[in-house]
Image 1 (spheres, rainbow, N blue to C red):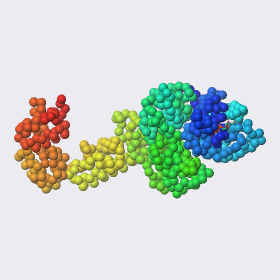
Image 2: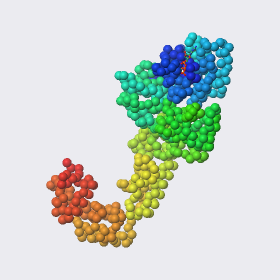
Image 3: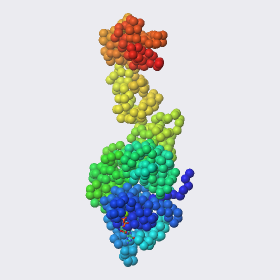
Image 4: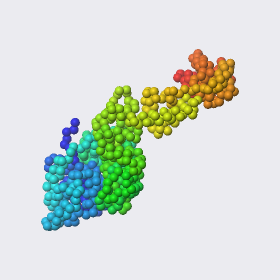
Length: 636
Ligand SMILES: Nc1nc2c(ncn2[C@@H]2O[C@H](COP(=O)(O)OP(=O)(O)OP(=O)(O)O)[C@@H](O)[C@H]2O)c(=O)[nH]1
Ligand SMILES: [Mg+2]
């Protein structure tokens, strides 16, 4: 168990030049502007990081963001996962455009804890300061930070900083324990090398702890690695807890394989996606509405991509309105259910809204369908088992991939799955061991979907048998491709339905249990004549064509087992062939090998027959060719 106190991450926000970085330095002693260009231009460009211990002893990381509107993408990459925000407003200027935009972003991301820091108060008199406090209160409107404390400070004189530290302490007191789903995620916001250590990535850790030595996966890209070391606040740790800024030293990967926007997590559950269902809200002062198929910039955690909006229930949505959408993303992103996102107009670039991921792996929906909207409502609001049931709508799914769709802790997810299995609405297609526990790769399927699929296959087979009475069954691969199921799911469904007696899996083909190859009396008559002729000359039997046995009929006859079809023209009666095979093996056992001419002499057959039979035996792995001789397939 880990009994260290909870860690926290707070972020700055606010208009350019209002004093965010200066305040961070005054609070922590660490200059968050680390790039040379930042120091030269006296402007934050990319994220900066610092940390401090509060009077209570709490450890807090601070993510310092740029205020300039050109770098808002970097601000968005840093704001994910923070526990609280410091919205910094310079007392001389008061609220400005990016004050409002950052406030809107905090609101959309549901970052509801914050402190308004009125800084640079050394530059104004008291009267002006009080006027600004009024103005700030007004600017907060009915946002989530409407009731937040407003603390006047000067980062230069240090006035108000103690009050600010206490206020941060009091605010963090109200942060509930960080969620632990058992599936830690580190949205990567920085990648660099440290000489002697190699590749390091950093981010704000959410949803679970990371441990040194652990195997990890980086998505999108499915890059595997192992955690060589962990750091938080500049000191080495064996374990990083959710809610902390975390630096991860990775084994065996180079910096150019990783970029901001990827997510480091435990292997096997987080599947990248290019289609998500979401609930979307446009901010009141969005300059534009959204119309069907509009393109937007999508920002989730530290990642960004272009996306097109399918409005599922509207022709257009106006500023201030909210609705259900499907987002078609231009490139894969590793997101999970419940992730909050921001959308921006691509050009001119401005924040227009945001929302929450409801299903990261939906199917394409048709618009204006009440059943689609209802299922999204269930996914958004339902009980765990309702959510899991709904999430399984699109077909068989592995237990581990359900995890990214449902945003439940492992315990709750298993609880919900067990409940659904017990009530019979979900089936375990195949357990790793009979009666064994569910493992991450166990395939689950809704019972209703299973019934529909099996009935569909039955109908397919019925039609096939009717049209092809001489065929033993339908090629499995063809059945599978018509159902559209992935190979493993199909195989497990076929096995289960087979065990239930719904159809028979017979080598490469599937058939209905009632189906057998049946010949018409006329066909039977021809066959009997043909077989009689074969018996007259068993080792050099006549070709089937001589008796009007067309290839289809010969194949069917072979499938019934009455004959062995070595090729189109060389067909033996079954017992003759079995006898030939047995004698071949006997000869091999007596003299070690058999040659083609030995075969020919022994059976008194032609070279053509001898060669065809021996090749057939090679194909069947009865014999094996070594130079000009045959040995037993399994023998030396
Ligand atoms: N007098 C006075 N000047 C301040 C105070 N805080 C910051 N400044 C000055 O304001 C200027 C901008 O400060 P920064 O901290 O770089 O502002 P910022 O919000 O980080 O700016 P960006 O990161 O570019 O958005 C600098 O010249 C600071 O010295 C303060 O409390 N009093
Ligand atoms: Mg700055």
